[in-house]
Every structure is written in structure tokens, then in C-alpha cells.
Image (tube, rainbow over all chains, first blue to last red; front, side, top):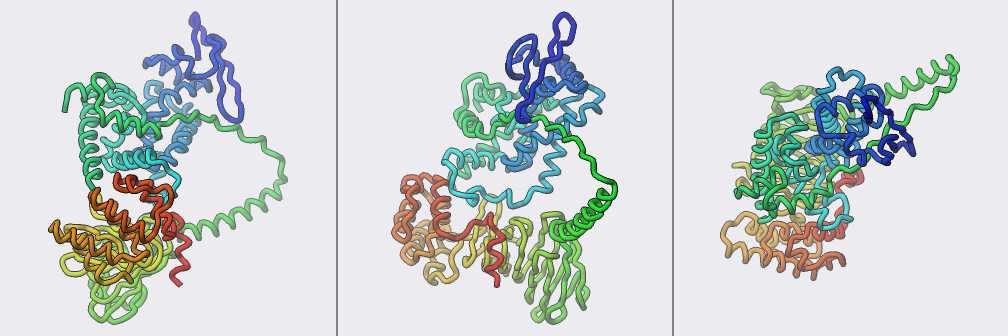
Length: 213
Length: 336
């Protein structure tokens, strides 16, 4: 979606092997990520993106995806195994794409999307074969020590209470800042700050205990 | 906590906290980068005659019905059925006469002369031996939870790992397929014997994985001991109990030496599990002994083990040929 002189200019969209390739007639740039100003980080722009996506503009939807993919991934990762989480993110956005026409309030997009993500993660948690939650070292010997350390750190976070777990995953895995988390998740910055610091304190204690074993 | 460190955690400004930075670098591996793939439009429907459509629909309905019946048995909540094998066992205080359904919250009690066979739907059965009290705590899709208050059960299950769990006063046993005996005695002391597949026993953050042929002693306040093969020399078993449950450092050091002296090639798994929970100097000693019994794979080094490199532990355990617990279904035939 792009605006010039008040007129909406529809971007040209191409598909290649099922993956979106977008070209803006205005910018001439080749990807959604490169369209910086178009995807401005303002609520009104987001509402415009949601309206456009609701009207079938796939480039606008792809922009929303870029904006929210890590948030959705962090929320899902707090509930399910990492290798399943990636597929679930795709699934959540496919659902959102199918149902966005039913979203009446364009300012409610983030809450609506988060609700889809949480429901999908919960559904999957019930269905996830417990076999997927086996200690990772049983899965095979092909991992590097950094991967093992990363898996151990992730496991430690996943043992924390849900509020801390989700906030820490968004901060440490997805690279979001505290203010970004507050804005996207729709909770107060104070709550996020408390969750981050209490969660980090518990995580340090847990890692320290693990290190001493 | 230092204010600048807090700023870094909050908005990545100020002086970076080394631990936060380390975690960020490690966990970037899980960061989500995948592009969105728009769903491909469905292909245009081809014309199919109405008669064939009905035939195909009927056939599909039959197949689906058969599958639903099968899957509901296998994947739905388990239908628990208690059947008297010996004596006068009781279900919620009343005598079990024939086969009776066991519902969540209900308790089975056997006295010194009675015994019950508890059928877990299509997943196998659990023998409730004399002098035992068992309660069904939870029965939900993919999660069945029993509580063994005291006594002994023999489980023989064919189910995905972690579907069945058994709470005891001193921790929880998770079935990773397929057969084991779990006993709880006075004061919550217990023993787990694995006859097929793997079982994980855990309390708080301490976990032990026991493969077929091994046993674990459970001690209240300490949790699970180190798994050992049941045919291990008695001196090894006695010494291992001291290593696991004796707080006296001198006695523990002597016992550790005894474990290493008595260990056979087969006991390398026990030594490896000990290494995971040992101090670095102990790990070095255990490494030296274990590697003389069974040379580790080329990827495993002494320094790595001392530094508790998990990948090296994994490689070494994998080389022992104890089987992969993820392939739980292959252990089923061991029962026969």
C-alpha cells in the first residue's frame, strides 16, 4: 500500500513458487522489508494497512506479517516446541488472512492476532505429541555445542512462569525492546519492565543452579 | 541490579549486561526469520458425475468412521478398566467383583492377598500388586496420570513418551515406553526397574533417564539416584547409593572410587550419568575410568567432558547402543 497525493496506489504483486514477491510502483524496491516509509510504525498507518489487507491487498498483509511475525513467534514459542512453532506462525497468519474480512475494528488488529496465536498455541499444546518434548539429547548426536547451550537456555526460560517466559522470549529471542513489547502486546510498560526483570532474575538463578550441577 | 544493566535489558541502551548479551547471542538461533508463504489458490474443480460422487463419499465415510473408532481408542482419553486378579481388591472402598471402570479421583487398594489388572485402553495394562494404593489423578487426551501412594505396580505400556506419568511421594516417573516396575515403600523410599524401553524419573529439576535393564533407587529428600544395571556387582550398587545419598564428602569420595573400581564395560552409562552431576575434578576421574572401559567416540574429549559439554555426553551415550528413546515403538517387541 502506498499513498501519493492522497491516492492509493496498488502495488504489483508476483508469485513465484508460492512465495510473495512485491514491487511498489512508487518506490521501485523489490521487497516488503525495503519499503520502510510505507510501513511506518504508527497506529494510523497500521490501521490503513489493516484496511487495505481486509480489502485483499496482499502487500499490506505482508507488511503486517513483517511487523508481527516475531511477536507471534515469541508467543507461540512460549507454549510449543521450537520446530513446531515456525509452522504455527505460518498457520496463524494463514488464519488471519482468511478471517481478516471479519475484523471490524482495524485498530484491534494486534489484540485479534495475538488471540489467534494464543489459541493456536494452546490447541497445539494439547495435541503436541509428548514425544516432541523429549530431552533433546535423545534426538541424535548432530548438534553443535552452541546449539546445545542455546537449547539449554531456551529450556530454562520455558520453565519460568508464563508471563515472564513470554516477555523474556520476546526480548532475548526475538530481539524486541521492552517498549516495543508493551506497545505490540498491549500491556503497560511498567508490567513489561517488571516481567523482564523478575523473569531475568529467575532465569539467572536457574542457569546458575544448572551450572553448579 | 546495576541501573545501566537494567536499561540494557529494558531497551538495549546503556552498558550491556554480559549475561543478557550472551543469552541474546545464543538465542538468536531461535529468532524467527521465515517469510510468509501465501497459500496457493485451490485448483479448479474437475467435473465428477454425481453418482460417482455418492460412491466416493460413502467409501470415504466408511474409512473415516473406521479410522475415527480406531483413533479415538488410541488417541482419546484412556478408558481405564480394573479387573480383579486375586483376592478382594477394592475400588473406592467397595470390592471389585468383575471388570469395573476406573474414573478420575477413584482409588484402587489391594491388601496383602489381592491383586488387580488395570487395563489402560488400547495402550496396555498395569498390574497393581498386593499391598498397593493407586489413584487415577488425570485422564485426558495424551496425558494419563496416576498416583502410586504406596506398594508396587508393574506397567506394560505401548504409548508415545510422556503420555503416562506416575506420581509418587518422592517424584514422578514418566513412561517413555514400554515396561517397568515402580515401588514405593515406607517414608516414600522407592525403586524403579526398567525392563523395556526408557523411563524418566524426576523431582524438581533433577532428572534421571533409565534405559532397559537398569534400576533407580529413590530416596526422599534426594530424588532419584543414578541409574545402574541390575546385574552390576553388589559392591558397585552399595557404593553408588553412598555417592548418591551420603552427605559426608569423605565417604562419598571413597564410594566414588569403589564405583569406578567395580564398574564393568556395561556400567559406562552409570559412570556417564554420574559425570553429569559430578564436580569437575570428579568428572576427570570418571572420564579416565570410563574411557578405559569403553573408548568414547572421536568427538569426545576429556576437557569437553570436564567442562560439561552436553554434546559430548550425548555422543558418548549414543555410542553405547542403548537405543533411541524417540523410537519408542521399537522397544515394544522387547516385552515378549
